[in-house]
Amino acid sequence: LPKLDVAAIRADFPILQETVHGKPLVFLDSAASAQKPECVIKAEVDLYHHYYANIHRGVYKFSQDATEAYENTRETVRAFIGARSTRECLFVRGATEGINLVAQAWGRAFLKEGDEIILSEMEHHSNIVPWQMVAEEKGATIKAIPVLDDGSLDMEAYKSLLSDRTKMVAVAHVSNSIGTINPVKDIIKMAHDVGALTLIDGCQAAPHFQIDVRDLDADFYAFSAHKAYGPTGIGVIYGKEDLLDKMPPWQGGGDMISTVSIEKTTYNDLPHKFEAGTPNIAGGIAMGAAISYINSVGFDAIEAHEKAITDYAMAVLGRVNSLRLIGTAKDRCSVISFVMDHAHPHDIGTILDRQGIAVRAGHHCAQPMMDRFDIPGTVRASFGIYNSTDDVDRLVEGLQKVVDIFG
Ligand code: PMP
Image (tube, rainbow, N blue to C red; front, side, top):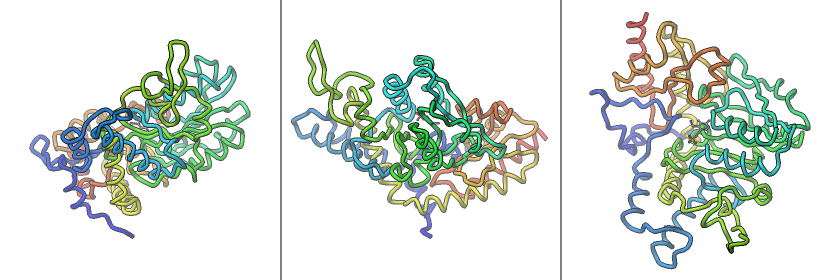
């Protein structure tokens, strides 16, 4: 197996040299947002230093150079997710905006009273609320696939929720709160068998393993660049071309039009039909740099490395006094959630912070999932390519302090 050189990777991320409260930083919150390698930072700085201009309409050199760099990312994204065409890769502010785009542009045009949308109990709020909003508007109903005790989806229950009323199935590829990898290929196939479309929220998949939207046969697929070592404010919603063609545009403005008169507007071709206004030019260019960086490390090495750290962390955390892991499904990513008997997640997070260890504490924008486990929140440690088993050891030491204080 290709091996990942953690020391070399760490040297690519300037922020990892920082100290926090006088201690070397242990960054265990990549599921919320990953840190950025120098090449991503440089891609933004180079644009602003050397060739910045608005894109898609300039006749002069800088505008053309910036347009080329921005549109090159489109091809990088297409290859990254295995889309047929760059016309299927829409650039949006992030996964949240991508899901809202589909819920509103597709949902308003095609949902009818009595239609059903199936989500799951483990969804991030951004894959729940947009559907509730359009369901309320159109008189559609939302159903949720239950989560089993180990944190995997109840596929039998899913089967029984599906019917000819199901019009959309929207589920996460990977749970952001507990790390379960869902069998999305099966979920999509079963949805298609009843004539429903599918949206996969790939936020927590994109940084960790190869996505292939064609192999999955996903109708829509969303992810945010900032969780995949790219900048904030940019992400992707993939959609099959025939569906995007049939959907009305979402936001109106410049760039998304072909011709405009006061009486009538005709719309631009895909993907621009869904990209109104001046986009995040620097973000788009830097997202390309981030994906190229991931490609240069390679998913074989990334997966093997992150699996080793995750297996190690699951084993050693399980031995910490009074600690209970939430979510123990076999098929998992490098996101680990836990609670402790006597300490609140926020107290644990604060004690760890004093030791330079950054973890997430709370409901992780997945309140229905916390309700499912009857807990207010968890402590979540999540790993990226720059983490090592040393970071896990520091976490365990930090948790020993929590045990000492709270018993
Ligand atoms: N879905 C999942 C599974 C996530 O982890 C997140 C981010 N925590 C989102 C959606 C929303 O992403 P963003 O805030 O970048 O739009």
